[in-house]
Length: 303
Image (cartoon, rainbow, N blue to C red):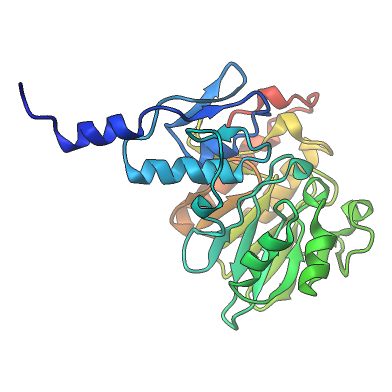
């Protein structure tokens, strides 16, 4: 009998037991964090195969701790707090918060570290005092930046906990009427050293994109990276305000925005050279100008 190879023993050890339960809302968060392990099957996430390495086990734990409905279940069913990787460093400046909230449609949120040791939170994870302590450990949080109304649910609570300023655009002010800073109009506004707010009406009337250090673009739900098309895309089937206005916004912003990291609320993140991102953004603006208004249909999004 031939000797079993180490990788075969590893695959067998990690193979079975992960599952997605019936609470899944098909928000795509788990598929972003565990690509190839979790995929979409019949309109919801499903485990495609078991992990075959320690790295893949870590991906599944990240997916489980980020899932807003806690639908990703490890072998045995109990999620161990000791396997929580969040906040998860994407590089030395940006961390992914994880712990996505059902009250923000499962949106991603981020921590942006600044050179002076402080931190900005872009959109919010689910509220928890223990999570807030973990996020603040990266540095005092001075600002909570809301990209639009759909992601405003926990903004005031996090801002009050941190003693931070809460930001939103006037177009979505009714979603955070007690905001400390209100962005107005469509002109870019510097809101901190190296950080600029670009109002981008379209997805909602008050959608905002935040640009940091000419490197990081927090796009909210205005556009994202699609695994399906391998390109920048707009979610025109869930554009609540106006796809025509979004096309105007993208056209206006395309020649002003320079970034390497695309960090959306929904859809995949992507890191590319700034020149390539600029070219893709101009092409996205042109494609969006050709789109027509359509009824809202969550099932039509091509993540």
